[in-house]
Image (tube, rainbow, N blue to C red; front, side, top):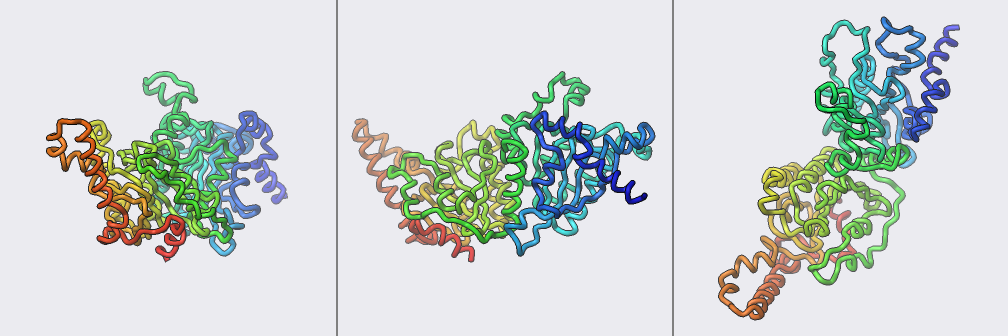
Length: 498
């Protein structure tokens, strides 16, 4: 009899016994919490913590009601393996947290927090990565069984989650409404994935209205168009299925090397650079050619777009990659791009991912407008992050390598990388060649009244500067380690890191 009661109680937490909640989720085009869980983890690998919990509301609701309507107190927690088919000889154990919006709008109650704290403690002790689905409405005021607190602010969940920064990789997935405490959890994660139907904000409509700040629909608060451009979201997913696939792909970079990979042909990679040094090009084609097929995952594409950040694999080995995009500000590094990249370098360093830097920059973005963005501080973050690197850094100079910006792309100095090499198209200087000629020969140029003659002298001086600053000259003076054939880049990166 006791076994029957236990099994019945356990079954009430499953989708098969929650048909109304399941149909409501499906009517919105969403998955249930357990559907997301099952799609994420390896089959039959999940062990659940606190499955029989219910909301702490026994003195205001019948226990039968709580069992039926507040299963697991709105949060699924446990351990499972993820991607074990790709890493059969590695530890793929992962801590899993899935907030369940079908239970009291995914709000965080007393036992909910206890369950979260418990799994975070296990993850810290065992040094396990964590994947968390953060959909939910924040704090829950209705847990009346709790009589030993006033404001309920003496909880440890947020500090525990934030405290895992740099200790274990933390991936967050947002879908639907993610407000208040749930948004705080999302924002603390190392990698933040959100679906196109996501709204993320530090308060929901009720709290905003209660604070006298106006009345808003939930869909007016933190839509994905806002958060994909302000840096809050690293990757925008189509839906929960895509988001779960991306979470597994991102987690895999931290799990190690894969044995199966395909390499694009390297023979014509040099042709991806235009012959005219003044023309722009699609540097993502170079990244995707250097990287194993389908291995490049870009982060924060619409934020700080002057530098591309992401993960790649080369012969199955995971790397972080940073790369200037000459289509944005001519490749100049602005405050947003610098700060974004500094955070990314720290992430790679925390979890032992070697880094490839592809440099093509005229330097840091300058001018009065740039200074309004706190450029002095934010660009300097790149130097701090570079100075702290303990993982191997390989810098490949594709074309322009000018001034402080180029130094920052090399970890703060051209001797900072374990190997710094240039394609034959590389060009080096303390500042952009055109600007250096105009500044260095200002008097000579100003002394020529004839426009054509002045332009002729400028062109001659520019050609001289370009010749002096070519990659082969920089290598001859040992400012860089080598000039390499573009087609050899993949192998040289692998040889450099050993």
